[in-house]
Image 1 (tube, rainbow, N blue to C red):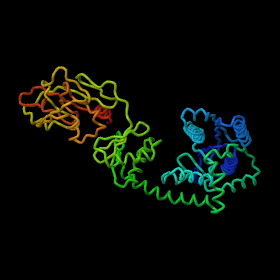
Image 2 (image 1 turned 180 degrees about the horizontal axis):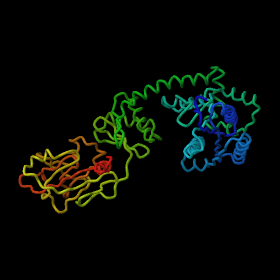
Image 3 (image 1 turned 135 degrees about the vertical axis):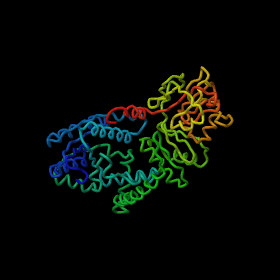
Image 4 (image 1 turned 90 degrees about the vertical axis):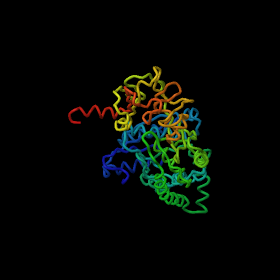
Length: 451
C-alpha cells in the first residue's frame, strides 16, 4: 500500500490469470482502507484466437461483478511483429506497455499495477545474465518505476496460489505459458526447477544478487553523471579513460532524450575507439538519428535536425534565419574615430564599413571553399579558422556568414574580416545584431508598464 498514495486511481493490468486475479482481489480488499480507487485494464493481444477473446470476456465479467471500472484494449501482436521484425514476446511487451501509457495519459488511471512476482523477477534476471546484459539489466525489476507498480515483486508464486485457493478465486489459464519455445517459459519449465533441486531458494538468491547490484548501480550512475555537460541544444559527455564510466555516461545522456533504444555494446565499443583514436571533428552515427562527434575532449550527442530549405538571404533590415534566430542590419554613421568602435561593440553585435560591400553580398551559411581573412592577419580556409577558434563542427553549419562569393566578410556574431574593417575614410557603418526571439521579446517588454 505504501506504493499507492491516498486519492490515486490505480489500474490493475488484469489478464484474468492467477497472478493478476490475486492482485485485483487484494487491492479491491484494501482500497477503502487505503483511500485509493481501483480500475482494471485488459490487453487482448490477438495471439490465441477464441481463447484470448474468452479471457477478455472473463476479465470484463469479473470486474462487472466486483463493480470495478474496466477497460479493454485490443492489439494485433502478430501483425506488429511482422511489421517491426520482432519476436512475439517482445512485440506483446511493447504493445502492452503502449496500452498502459495510453491509459495513464488519457486519465483512465494514475498508475498501473502489474502482478509480477518473485519468480518472474528471477526469470528476468537470469534472462539478462544469459544475454550478456550489463549491470543495469541484471538489477532486475523494481517495485516502482514512475507510474508502473509491481506490488507483488517479493511474493512467491506458491504464496499467490495459496491466497487464490484460500479466497476461492477462479481464473483463466494461458496455454502459451506451457510452450517452452518462448525463452521465459523455457527457463520456468526446464531450468529453474533443476536449479531449485540443487540450490533451494535459487530464485530468492538471484533477487538478492539484483538488490546488491542495484545499490552499486546507483553509485556508478552518480559518478557517471559527473561526466555529463548539458548544453542548450545538445548533450556532451566528457571523454574519460575509465571506460565503464564513460559508456555509462553516454547511455545516461541518451536516455535523458529517449534515444537509447537499440544502442548496444558494439556501439559503445565504437564510441570508445572514437575517443581513443579519433581526431577532433570525427563522428559516428548511432541509432535513432543520433550523431556522436569528438570535440576538444568531449563527445557531443546530437539528433540530426531538419536542415532549413533556405540557406542564402539577400541583405535587408531584418532576416529570419531560423524559427528562433533573427539577424538585424542597421546603417549608422561612422564615429570620427574608428577606435571608438571597440567601445560600441557588445555581445552579438558586429560593425563594418557598409561601403566596402559589393552589391551581391549575401547572408548565408558555410560552403566548401570559403576563405576568411581575419583582422590583422592573412587569409585561410574558413574551416581552419573555425578550428583555430575551437568552434565545434556540429555548430559550424548553422553560423550565419556575410559573404561575397567564397570570401567571408563576417562570421556572425564572432568577428569581421580585414576586408570590411572601418578606417579613417569610413562614413557609414553596418551594424549586425544576432538575436533570439526571447531576447527581442524582452527588449519590447521593457517599454510596457509593469516590465
